[in-house]
Figure 1 (cartoon, rainbow over the protein chains, first blue to last red):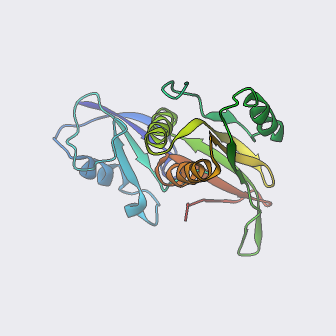
Figure 2 (cartoon, each protein chain N blue to C red):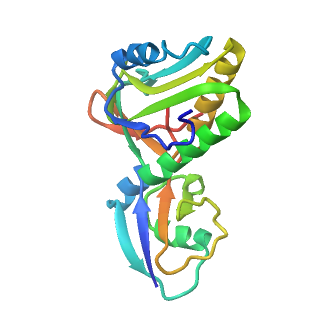
Length: 78
Length: 147
């Protein structure tokens, strides 16, 4: 299945990309996908990164074909 | 009256001070209003390890952010008896001393407007996926985190 992954802020900087489509061969939860996407990236506090699946921040969600996933570092609005 | 319509929150670059005056002027015909409450966020020249912030470059997960802004508006209208509410947030580069957030609520009476503005600001800081790159004078940067 194909999933679109969007990277923001310091995660986009560490990954050196803002978006990619990845192919998943196994069933993953959002939390597992986050771990996989962040692996090898130079990010000090990976626990502070949240994953949104179709804009939903619940990381227990199971990823489905066609989902839009976003890796969100701490918010800094205002 | 216009509380259900999703509104565009993001503006490119700093929010011009004239926008605040114009917003006030636009509400003078609404004579059921007795109080406006305004919050203005201004980019601060923080000092970190001897280096000074000169600007913040804002980015956002825009589609999600616009939806979260809308949810916050809906929650605010359900919670407070406000006449109207407007939010503007910058994207892109905003220099120190310039405005990056403008929250404007109106009500018949002051307490409701003040409480509603406070609610908006706290919700925006906690829930909206906006990211800020603090740029120092030597072009290095760090990523801002809301406290």
